[in-house]
Length: 344
Image 1 (cartoon, rainbow, N blue to C red):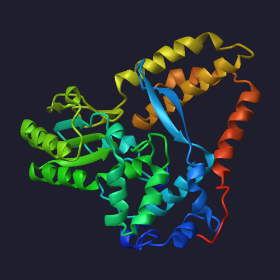
Image 2 (cartoon, one colour):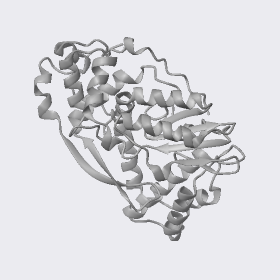
Image 3 (cartoon, helix red, strand yellow):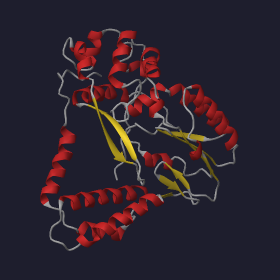
Image 4 (cartoon, rainbow, N blue to C red):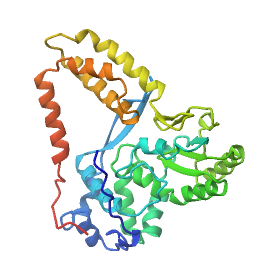
């Protein structure tokens, strides 16, 4: 595997949006036609759908932007992505994923995990607006427009390109206070959206730390999901954001994902040796292959036999072609708004 080339990042004062104080400048930065912001209210639209929660029978509601609005949000994300953010932030960062959150705590003998209760539901509009005014130094009217573009019904929607990065920026002061508390207790801290993880090679007062974090969260309108405040010792298996850190300080596939893979394989197993299968079967096979790959990303070489047998199942060519077309479409998708020279 090739080593990742570090992404060059710059201070927030070098962001193109920094000190943006006119509508004309904002239109240019967002690649809108002159006067395009006058029509912005007309393109702010969302649709809702549900997805399955991982390893659960529950559903998660997603609020996603319509096509044109999504393109503008992607542009805002592009302008913010190369800004330097804390090393302890995992979510929304290029070249980082949930597995890096587990890896960050491999050496921790003692681990405290805290989830924020209904984090997105309680991410309100005002901290987003204040981020643009106070941190990016935009004019109030520019901040108002940007806030309108990336918030919905007074909060941060779950399905926008900007959701993760703005949920962090809106509450960056809160998370910085929590980082300082972790440091005071000799802990390493990482953040993945609303999952906070603290680890140390030495014992620490998890009760005291969690109480102090509770007070900080409440100051900013949030609170912990109390049943998910967990403290683990040296002999415990430590679940961290879709991974498990073992007592031997290695990363393992969670039991929930293992069971999902075993059950899914039993469903498609009768298709081994069959000449063709339905589109529904093909979707299940492709889903299983994705789950196996996710497991292998955590533990290299996991499920070799299931992987071998699953790869023997023939998927209709039309399904493979349509999948490739969708992947190509995602890679080549462009913003259908007037293109201008890239902003450095």
